[in-house]
Length: 252
Image (cartoon, rainbow, N blue to C red; front, side, top):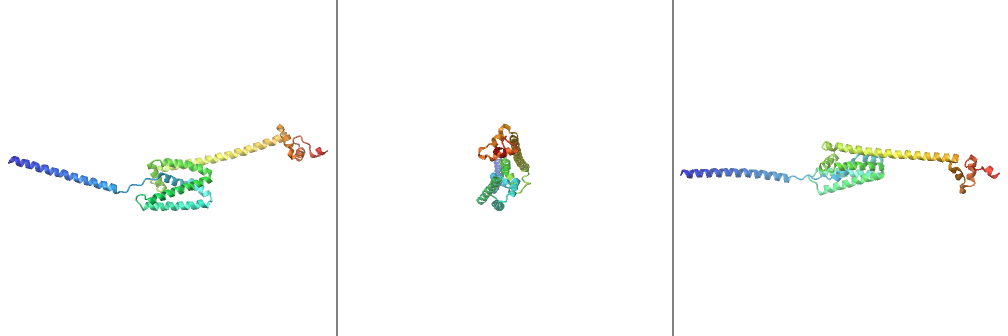
């Protein structure tokens, strides 16, 4: 009798403990499933389109604005206004949707294409700008080469400079490199112009000296060109070049 009571007590305790374990396990599974459901119910964050962000940065670059302000092209002015409108439209679409929609992706592609075309048209008109923006493009592409950099660039393009603070130094460096390139291009062009003027002056001086002193027989050869005789020879004789007789001496 005593053994039966003991066995019954042990079984009851075992059943009770098993029930506690099952209950705890059930609660744990319920909590885990709820967490997973919450995670999967949240929309996935859209990946940043690095190429589109590079195009936006090039369009908004200070070099692009400066080149645009130098031109009076009505077509470019209208294109810039269209790009501004497209960006405003895209910003509204992004604000109204948690995830990227097909329409939003299409708008993004259209905007990037328009920005690239605008920059390309400016580059065709301004050689210095073309080389300057090429340097800037390389620097910005380097920033957008990583997902973190592309995301920060997108924040910068949207006006969130505080959120993109970590890349501002790189953008500044890109602008500095572009400006240095432009200065180098302009300095080299100025140097070529000075050299050309100097060379032209030197050639002129040498030619005059050769004519005056009949070096290498230059004056004699010039003054005796057949197609310009006898007027050329008479003129040379009048001013004492090339050992030619004057008209009076020739007809005497």
